[in-house]
Image (cartoon, rainbow, N blue to C red; front, side, top):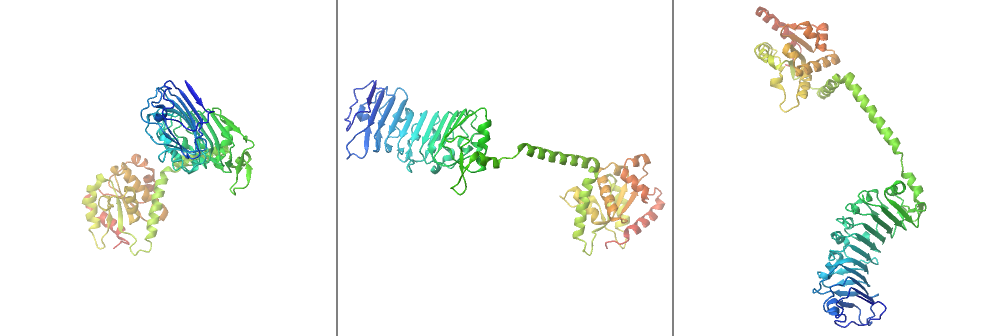
Length: 493
């Protein structure tokens, strides 16, 4: 049953005027012509009906240019969803938690605002599926961020709204995972970006007709995985390269149908920074483009060249890289103390295998360090390395803090990686400084075939003199005298 009073000049509605219409499904009330001395048109649904009809599913009410106040009452039980369309200067609702509001599935508002208290009515129509709100850029509209609580929304149209003044615009459309159609018509906003659309996974159609010029960032469409249709009307952009993506995207995208009406893409204008001049946006956007293929080619070529240089460096000079680094570090530290009165902390850095430490303790220390004057200062890794410092740094520091390096060569020494590094650093220092700073002492006889596998040591043995530890005890004293005399020249003491 439909009651259409849109053409009737209604000046008053008596209590229970519609009380007998128990099968009423649609009520259409045109511009209510209440007397001029009634500034606010107040409609109380429970008074008009007594009991609101169970089958009521469609309501249209218009108060023209006068404001309206609605009271529903709490005695209503509707058998189906309600389509509610209201036109007024502005609308206030008295009983926000009425069951009538929770039954609304389609809500169309043509008013400056429709609030319950100071809040937008959207907070209370929790079952709404379709929402259309046409305002007149009112400042009393309230916070529309409550729209993100309408999780059943499938269609949303906002028209003539100051979205730029909304404090929570960036979250207004969050949680709307069922929204399929979004229309923003004649709304004022400065930009659109991906923060607005991050949850609109089901959106299929998007209509944009901004009030003024706007920036549209490319991430706006990144989350719109279901988008099929995008329409622009009366679009005006700012002359900004952030908008340049739109031209190529609209042209090349095969999944989304992009339509532009008045102007078309070719006629699209953009506003320059001075706020006065306009340019053709397609021509302007060409200044923002760059050759992506060339960038990829140049970056790939540079990467390959660097990669080849690194590989070849490690292939042919890999064994020198680490020593050169540590030698350079040693030079730097030595240069810092070049004017020091005592340039060297030690007379001798002793390079030996830990497995030969008993010989160092029993033979070397008593005959060198405890013999004098002058007394020699020996640097032993087990005693003089700095605790907590990196081992390689300890070795480098100790070599450059010592006047000479004494290498105690044995089979154990040749099998030790740390000893090999110490020998390597000492020989590099020898080659650079060209001083008599390296002394080799063989603790045992080492076959030539074993020695030949250690190329650096083998070359040194051929070019430089070295000492052998005598096996005859009667020769030990002469050995120590000779070694002590060599090491005690220019001592630190």
